[in-house]
Length: 596
Image (tube, rainbow, N blue to C red):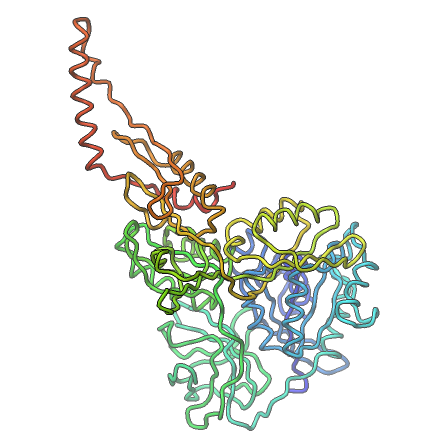
């Protein structure tokens, strides 16, 4: 155990974590020149295409120093705020963290958020100044920011470059010297924490664990404490670029177990693994349960694929523990699931992974957040879906979730950022100048206002310089209404939204205009209406297609044409009474991107 070091890499998005991880793997000889590629640890096409890390990845490296060989277990984590749950799980399995800061961009919101997470778990922090090879790097200024934030010495900050390999040897030496070896008793009963799992179609579920105490041998009868299932450890081993089988593993090791589990419900990330014959007394205190921020309905395009979609979602949940879902049905879309996501990017990624990995086309409804309401009789209810909203006359109050948002931006853009936040009903709480050119703004904002397009707008008003991070604060009373969309008088529940009364007219008008563009014209007139209760607040009309019934009349009296037109008019009137309108799939998706 003396020679084991477990550490993770934390940073804001696009500060060079994956590139630096590649360099560490290359220098320690874990991967050969032939296997080396950009973002080696990111094994999804989606991650490479977008240049972001979506899942944390664990890998073992061997490193020799002064005649001793050390085992370094590295976890590369995502940087985007939507994937912070992956970061919290990685931190729970480590004793140290490399805090990477881009020398040209300085400290950003997610850097601070991840750092606090690591400090809460008493991790040893090694600050690294990355991208030193860039002409726009400002090492002196950014080093001062790091020293102010962590309270370390200037010489503790390691200058490095993932691209050129500068400072990578110093990082490895610092990992060995400064990160403590894992504590634990190899002779105690087995106590291991499961921090991730993946599904392999040939071998079933592969669970990744970190052993706190005790040891595990191949063939042992193991028990999952949370689910209560017992299984044989068919194969155990450590995580190289591929899985490397071992005969036994003991305290401090990070490894994997394959026990032939096929059902996704039998493995829970955060569970404790122990031996059936000699169980440990209590479970490991891992990490808190995930709190979804954004809710949306996910429906199969073809209703018959409902069971297939459930199967795909369970498989995806194994790989992405922050996804939560439960069944629901809609009059417009049939059977589907109400899914909880950590943010809009998370929702987009899940939708894309369903299409790519499982060949499953889905329709996603308008995202919303979870509200609480109280009936006049004192009963409290949770509203996850606009259709759960009771009649306003029966309600005492409705509360919506607020968040505390941290925005770090250049001083030039403070005005534009403040205007955007105040438009979104934000309340300015604090304004601090970190340096003469960088400002940290703290706002209290309703979560419902940021789920749509806030992040994109923030990036555009600040020309990409602003960084954003948030955490849930509390619930506050608000004047919310349910906005319904009617097609020829029939409500389309998949397009309903809960919104603040002040913004209802604007949103209703936008949705009606968008649907007018997207719904194909029929033989009859279609009325598109936005309504709050019985009150119509916006309306658009889709004009009917008209067949030229008078084409066969040439010459003769006008009454012949009039007779044919009157006949057509009667037919159209009847048609409108029985005609049902088909809403194309693009219409549901377009409502999500109203401002673009």
